Image 1 (tube, rainbow, N blue to C red):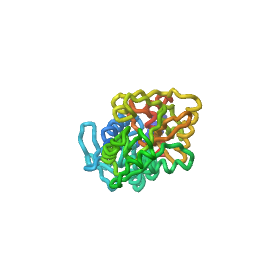
Image 2 (image 1 turned 45 degrees about the vertical axis):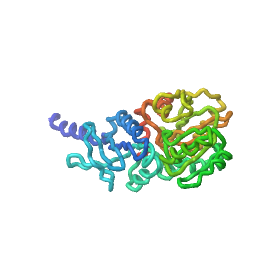
Image 3 (image 1 turned 180 degrees about the vertical axis):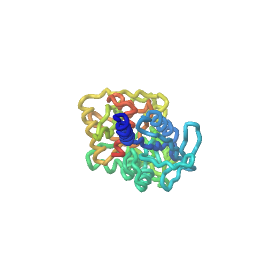
Image 4 (image 1 turned 60 degrees about the vertical axis):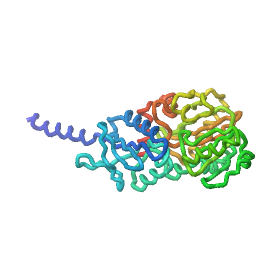
Length: 346
């Protein structure tokens, strides 16, 4: 008798246990993009894919190019993305995503385009919002926005494609050497250090190959540092600071991605410098209303940090600066990536 009575009770307990288990979230890891940073983004996205906890998440690699948006499975098979609702179909089953992990460097993942698209679809995503992304991606607008707050920046000169180039006016304002940069590009694409006035035009041609806007900045001779700021466990957190010592003339593509630099974490700077740059990095993050990851680059002139740029989808490979800073802070890649998703879902 007791056995017969107990069976349905036991069954009910098992059934309740089953329905109380949280369902795994479908996570789209977007990677690729339309810029020269495509290859770097693919590497970042694959690292995120590898380290996401399969007990919590169902990760899907979504490769975005100008020609197509596709889900790429482990067999290398491609399935088209339905752009009207950002879904995919596999074996007749339609899959929607609970959250998007943004691993695209450059357009359309770092300049606000995808952020606005996902906002319209009401799909949470891990990077900052669309306006903040567009602002930080535009070096000229970013620095102009922050200067009134007392953020120190290099002297700059702006040019758009088609403008008349007055080499003397440029040199008179920013001096030599100077840096010529594509205004909306990353990974040091379209960047050149110019020592002679005669080399300005070649540097401008190089910059205009990446963007139709250029910023020319005075050379700052000092210690370069990179400061990661993230929202971790619902709290804005400044990560340990990285000092950058390039083997090349500056922190160019080779230095960033081909081992031609030393990235020293924690940075060999004074306590005064550390406190100052940490405060400014956190101030910029909060003032701009950022969320997710950011990595700000500064150069010290004496004890004063001068801002170069702010990256809102920084590199995420094992060798990238921000993951190394997180590791120094005791945050594993699994924790770093999971935190970004949970903050987006929050």
